[in-house]
Image (cartoon, rainbow, N blue to C red; front, side, top):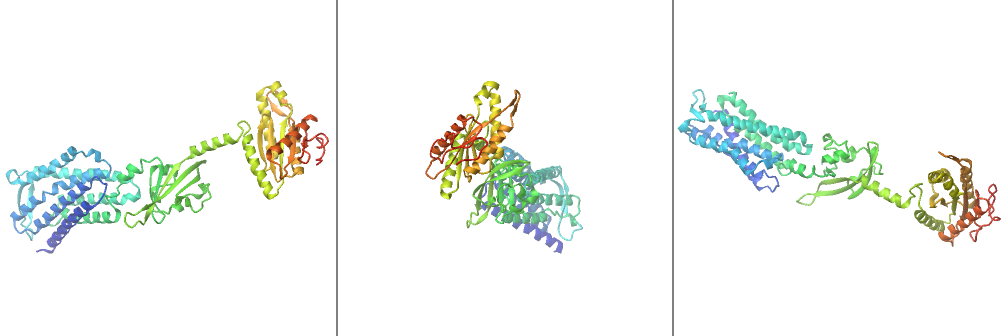
Amino acid sequence: MNAAFSTFIALFAISGVLSILLALYASLQKTRFSGMHLFVWMSIATAIYTFGSSLELASSSLGNIKFWIAFEYFGLPFISPLNLLVIFHYVGRERMMTPRATAAFLALPALTCLLMLTNNLHGLVYQQMELRADAPWPLAEFAMGPWYVVNGSYTLGCGVVGMWLLARHLRQTLNVYRKQTATMLVSLFLPIGASLIYIMNLTPYHIDPVPATMSLTNLLYCWALLSGGMLTSTPVVRENILESMRDGVLVIDPAGRIADYNKAASLLFPFLTSQLIGERAADVFPKERLRTEDADMQFLEAEESQIEWLADHELRFYRIRSSPVLHKRGGGAAGRTVVILDVTENVRLHRRLERMATHDGMTQIYNRSHFVECSEQLLADSRSTLEPLTIALLDIDRFKLVNDSYGHDVGDHVIRHVVQTCQAHLGERDVFGRYGGEEFALCMPGRPTADAYRLLERIRLGLAAEPVKTAAGAVGVTASFGLVEARPDQPLKVLTKLADDALYVAKQNGRNQVRIAPDGQGPADENIAPSPHGSPNA
């Protein structure tokens, strides 16, 4: 036998064996891929065609050749339509493939098979068939019938539609799934290319090269099934699950590299592109945008964490949940899924509610209850550290007259002016709150009486020196102050009462002055505290 013929026969036989193995392997796979049974039938059809081609090429008479050609048609017409049906399931169009639609797809191949079996009666598939005179081994030469053209056109059409669907899907699929999609595309292109070569009569003695290319196609399928989990983890599952999730999802492999992400994740992190698949996740995140102290990006591995992220000059808040993915067998880590939830609005609402609960709405300083809470804690701390702490109350002088003369809008303006003036002189540790109406309170940890007195004097002088500019004209503002230094045995209520008594003395003695409670033991009077321009007399 000619060596070239022997090579073709071997390739055809190898292709048939691989097809049988593929059918067996695929039929034993536990998978949710709805088109797996079609893949099994496609492999069986391929095995019939390639084994028949091998035996046709090995035949020594025209009768045997005709028999094996007829045998091939039990598989040949079905391969391309079945492949297209598999692709429909693979790209998520399986709902189109109803039982009626599937039967319609396979009706023409079934008719082709029937016509081939009865070809001697009508010659629709092959008009005539005889042995080639120039071949060194028995080979058939035939004249195509009209149905041969119909079947060939249908087969080519199925292949072209399949390649279009896969190419379109390939552009929409991330790198982690492109290997199996590209494998299917190449495996479909090879037989179509071989068919074109056969039609153009470019093979020795016009031998059909398609069964030989099937061996390469089957090898590609074997490699993709074994190494890439082809048809067991498909982009359809990804699109139906990952892309339907509103939360961002990152898939990270055991080496910490990005394996996949969904569209929601790319909206949260616009720097994510398909080119970053395979890069270490900790390296691709722009650290300058992270407002949380986590230089090593540990939030990608923490079970649950929250980060602050600068996005388009806006601070966003993301809650991160990272979960390990375990292998079904052995329990080893197969990677991690990182779910990113945008909780910006929740955090902002919580902070607004928290601020409303702790801050005065008009002045945005602490309200009375939160001032008391903070002062209680600072008072307890000062007792344990023996650090001085002073409490002061201040009241805007003749504020009722301002409201009666100018209206409440001007009165509110005066209150905000007093707050701004106070804040301009206060230190970082000083706690400032609105105690009620036009009265304010100060808790000053670390400031003894003399230091606190000087601070209050600066505030008093600042208020007196700068009238409030309003639409009704300039309004002069002064304030009176009562000051007390904490003693170890005095609770906050006693201290504020003493400061209030000192404030009352300041009001009774002409206003616009600072008065100090006498040793924290009793009410202040006009002889205990200095005049507005004096020094503290403790």
